[in-house]
Length: 125
Image (cartoon, rainbow, N blue to C red; front, side, top):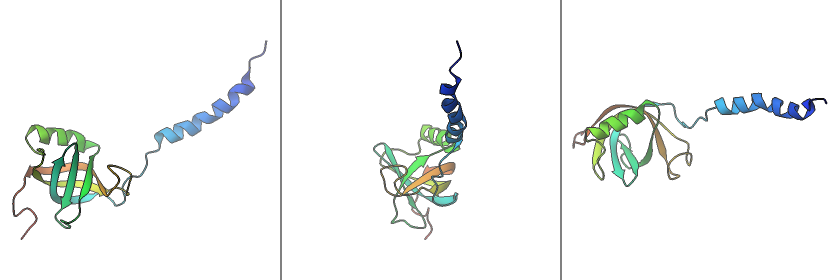
């Protein structure tokens, strides 16, 4: 009885392709990461950010990497309360439209440098 190696060859040929796909990480960032300041508000299960440089913009917030643990720590300290503004300074990149969040503009936060209660002078005069 001979082994059925010809049947296995197509499967074996797929292994490198599957490994390459598994290790590929999509580029979600539309812009390179940079420091942003502004206010974030918790509404329901989501977070919305209004940057100091463009207060009319509203961006869905997605925490990634190190910022996930930093966000949890800040929440334990009382930051990011529901329906209240929190001043933030963080490293983030804009996501491509529709890739994360509810489909509109979004922000991928990588690191939180500061999170505190909002103040009137946070974004300058």
